[in-house]
Length: 234
Length: 238
Ligand SMILES: Nc1ncnc2c1ncn2[C@@H]1O[C@H](COP(=O)(O)OP(=O)(O)OP(=O)(O)O)[C@@H](O)[C@H]1O
Ligand SMILES: [Mg+2]
Image (spheres, rainbow over the protein chains, first blue to last red):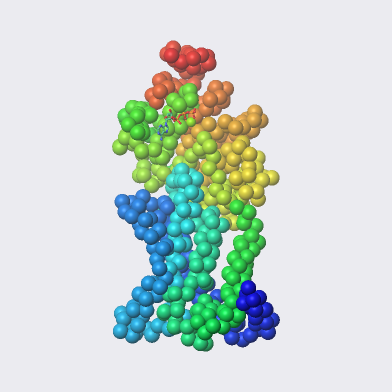
């Protein structure tokens, strides 16, 4: 109990004093997770929509696979990305290992199935509504996908945010591919793991509170952003 | 003048679902002009027939012969559904959508949508979300959306089912206008008064089959079969 209070006090002190190190790793956390969310959304949302409107033989298999990929253990993803990016690996020449880019890559792999799967669910319902109309209007496949993505944007925002939530709280994969290097790849979650290991519980907790606050703030910000839009009432 | 997609020749058109025949066999010719009204009791296959003509139902292969290629045929038709489908957009954007699809600029499309909204009496609702409209207003929206691309062939499935008397007359005026400007109308209705006012030809569907068809006057004044007579009199059908 005392530790938690100390953690809160420490968190308050760090935030009020604009602790430069805290700001640095917080911004890096944001940068990596937002980057991963944007890229994963750009892949996952259209793919989810595409999956919702197409009937093909392997469809059930693909959906089952997608759902299975949602449960992909991040540590394993980290390990595989590590091997691919390591000096002797196929992408070793790019020199990406232990960079924020490597962390983004790992997180994209982890959250894309999640975003695609939630998007698929939402778009499938909307497609059931729109099906006859869009067929009757003689739309092309890409017009259908665009209409569904646009009209389903509220639900899709939730999909993206779920992806962001998973990314910002993730530690296993980015620890492996990022290496938790000070001033280079240290983010909130890896810093928490480190401080906890050192027995610095107050500092670790303080970072934890900042992490939670950040996740909540981003959610609020995105929802507020979507609500300022006039047609956001849907 | 662009070549017409009509007449449409149907030979042995059938629609099956779950091993049951819902419609057909239907063999007939849909001529290039006028208004055809489809009547018949609930479940007689009116919706199925209209949807099959529009290409929304899986039906007998090669039963329908149009005068143009599939793409042209599809592009020149519009359909107003029995229960209107509202997109999650404003009334104006819903009506403008077919023009946007056709590649028109947003500003133009919206201006045209505002004009059509005016014609169907939805001016006051332009910026409202489409799904909050009343049932009748939704039908008016669907009509405006169908007419905005000035289709050559327009299908309407009970377009006035939820409308009050005044709105019904307004819609009938719009449909008569559309017919004047060359739109071929094929519609179903349960309103015999409306059938008399709008139809050139009448088709009586019963049990998925065309039971009787012909020019309006002959059809209403001298129905040939006892079933048609019974239906027109509002009696129970055998
Ligand atoms: N997908 C389907 N599977 C099985 N039966 C169907 C299907 N679609 C329609 N039917 C049946 O086909 C028959 C004709 O339906 P349809 O909707 O064409 O009738 P309708 O003449 O439009 O009736 P209403 O006047 O009530 O609108 C009905 O008995 C209906 O239950
Ligand atoms: Mg019907």
